[in-house]
Length: 180
Figure 1 (cartoon, rainbow, N blue to C red):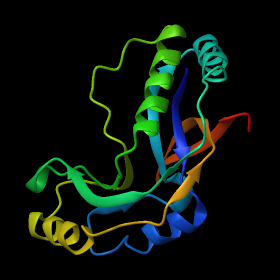
Figure 2 (cartoon, helix red, strand yellow):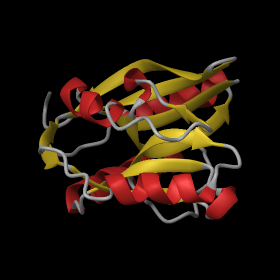
Figure 3 (cartoon, rainbow, N blue to C red):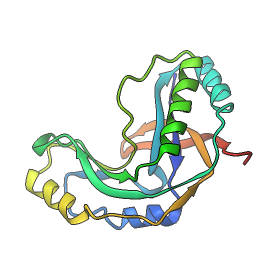
């Protein structure tokens, strides 16, 4: 079994700006710059044959390059139950179409439909029982985040490997958009 997801890599200069915001929450397990991404479709643990089918289907995804930017921050959960903080993604019809194409590819590869609404974001940290006041203060002090626009001309299939320090992501395959 291999744990997989399709995602957009965050350009290094954008990742550096996000990493500079990673402080002020002692309970946070901050994501390193190389792990920062925007998930298009989480596949989870799949058999090697399903991984091959998913790769084949993702390679057929057709989309044109587009521009994207990050905007705002937020959290999953509330109070002491916040389990992740994230940077938001500015509204992008092209991103939604690409995510839908990845969803269709996953279903053609035999994966069950993802029934959750697509909420594009970049996970900055995972938390366990944070101080609610510190979490609220971090969100308030970072809520005006607005990144420069960056070009999306590819996406990748990544594997996730659990380590003592958190997950480590490895690019397994890169897919170009618009003939790239």
